[in-house]
Image (cartoon, rainbow, N blue to C red; front, side, top):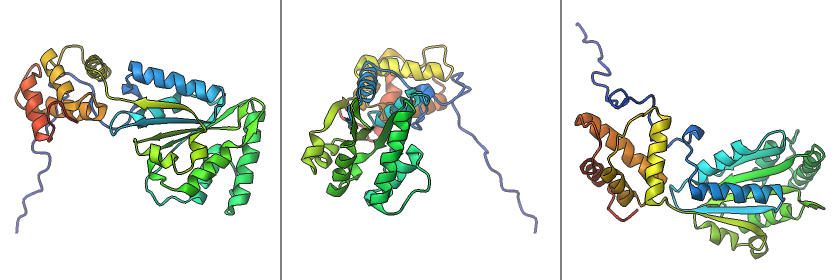
Length: 286
């Protein structure tokens, strides 16, 4: 029996060539090349740098879903020169993390060798390594993303213990928490730790102007030289996304695809409404 060959990619949908783009501008994968330094994010970066350089100990960044916490964390990590900082970023991926697992990760990221299983020995290793980092004229920084998942009084107490490690110029280690608003409740599990928060930053959604600039910036990085979205379309994007970066990316990506399929030279507000409704978004709501 003669078999028909499996035919794949009969019709590949891609808007890049149509809109003269070199790459997809609105992917939600974190890519530092597309980082948009909004006034809010610029302010946050300055405050984090201040907290770290003055060895304040604990800084906290809180924001709703999609406001760019992870993007900010990765950008801040890139900004810390490896010749002056021993820095690491940990991402909490599940809520059943033990303090032993967490501090083993701490030790690994800080460059501790032959990591011990016993918590007391492990903390002693971290303490010695922090002294080595200071002797190297470096500043130790550990950032932790999705901290609201660490809903454990024991872990919060362990963090407080680490922040008790001090030297004449300030804390031996700088810790930066990134999390959703629920992080406030997690911090409240250990009131003395909550009182040690030296810098607290709230990330909010973009304004309409920032939304417009954000879209233009990402299109420019992707190779665009013209106006793909009309002013009405951008206004409509803001209305449906409330300025949330992740939602802006999703709406714009879908709008470019819809525009390509309908052979629209410019994306108008009607296309934004169509894709936003399809995505289950309502104007004026997140």
